[in-house]
Image (cartoon, one colour):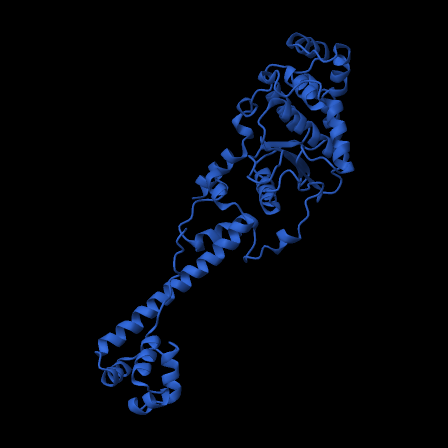
Length: 377
């Protein structure tokens, strides 16, 4: 059987006075008469609301027999412990509230927040992060994440952490620059997106072209319990695409980027519009429309049509042949076949390589943020 720790109780001198009265069968009135003080003062001493002065300590020592120093020590130690307990309790309350809304430990590890030595420093960092001047998180309780819903599969989803990730994305966007946004240029680039998937350094080439259309792009790693693949929103006059690298696969990268481009072209109308996407949990009409657009950009329907004639047998050679014929990466081909259920997810996974190592460091938001923090210290 587990042994439970007994909670620490800070016992004041009033308890000792009360014990002395019980031993002698005295009432508070009796002690007031003996000490020559008011009944109210005795009552306050017993409740630890009245500090024991040197004079009071002398009176108690005469009444009960202990030294004056005994009573002074009891009172001083009690009040020191009381101050420590109050400070510790207050710190625990503050930290408990902050940690409920923000994954502080993970944020410090990622460099989103500077390390702190005490609750005051933590509060200052929280104020700066959210640009607020008081610890009031009701704005997070009231916030809605458009088209982003908790899946029954992901019972650990945390809305507050998702909002924290999005806030960091908004802050990080300010560290990037892009040309003036031209919607037609983005539309033309999107049509040729699939061709970049097979080019040497295709990711870097595409991201540079994306910047030329006026779209900001960067990587912001995902937070625990958020299930975020990507996001799109406005930073002043420039649309922004953020990739979390949650799955860190080439096929996931291209599909997430295509999905967010679809949001920019089809759905980001007002400057306050934004989308935070879990691509495993598509339910709204808007998200389905963005998915269909992304599917078209990556020639997914053409890929599935290519393999209809081969039945259940899909070889590596046929994947490579499809890639060459449609001018799309084998990783995209395999990803589409997996998603369509035409190929077991256990097969040909070697084509679905990690993508983050292929993206230049300049697009890593956390690296830039850490550099900015070092400059401000």
